[in-house]
Length: 432
Image 1 (cartoon, rainbow, N blue to C red):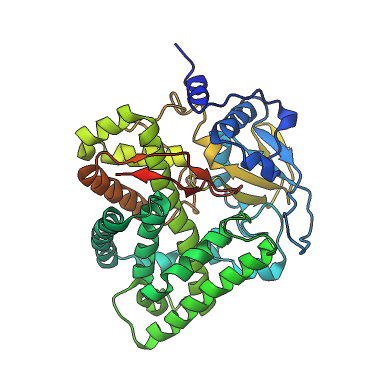
Image 2: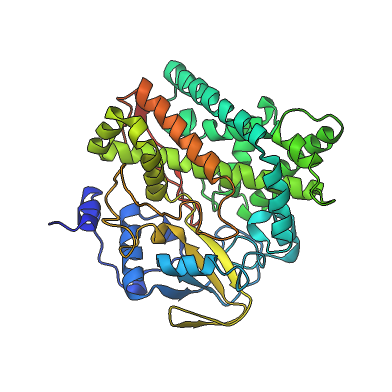
């Protein structure tokens, strides 16, 4: 029987012979390579060097010098990603923010939302935010998902651009999040552009040549912060039925969100929350176009395969490639002695292809079960708060597309985002 990985690589028209010395996860050139070549590199790392040290990257095109540290360890095995995630007292999320390099303290504080804080602050933030997502608010959001999906598909069918990202994958989750937070439609384009910049890793399609990517990142964050601070202040005295009103007026044991905390949560929602769903939906079209037998299964029985197909799309896409942790104390992980202050990157994308966990991991199977992927992070206090919402959005959109346009397909090669952090697709030609 042909090795599923070899079949996958050959089907993508790529098959490289990597050595460990060839692989540099800090080099942007690596992330510009085709997906199949990157998969082959991670397969080698899982087998021969599952915990491997890399020097910190240089930020291309930036005149701002960030402090250079001692590098980081890449964790590429499912078991190691799980162990680090389940030990938040050792593997901290707060120091240095979400980056391979340590950011200056003022930048860390500026972007210190739930994703990059530890207890007790993390527990406090999560408690307040979770309370805002009460059953009534969740029902309202789920109703808007159905409505927005239908509207987005209607627009695409009537006046689409021929780019699946522009027509469907990008506007759908963005509009839902903006509706949730009470952002007016006049700001949708601004929010989308800022989100693209923050998650672009400096990709020249989003950060133009001649623009400093770090400056662009900070300006985009400031713009989003300004939008949410203005809305939040208004909702304190003029609450309506949206999540922002629930957040700014929520009080748990005399604790409330500050304006900065509300803004940081909004930045998190419109970047990580929006991008996860956008990327998964886009990779869904790519996967179903490349595996017509699996698409035929969905067309024949979407309801029966809705849950498993959504999780397989998320596993296949692995939208967030990695997340950072910093060790609070010395720790031995799978026989590797790590020291306090060491940084590790939890490569979710690699864990989701781990041969020790997934049967035929390079086979796209809409009925895959079990499927304990880490597409929303690994178990622990930082497991994605919006996982249920993202699953719902992906399920609803593909239900609508399969029912109304069963012949939808990719018609050309997708354009990969040049990012170490998000497994994004910038453009994806398609046809109904």
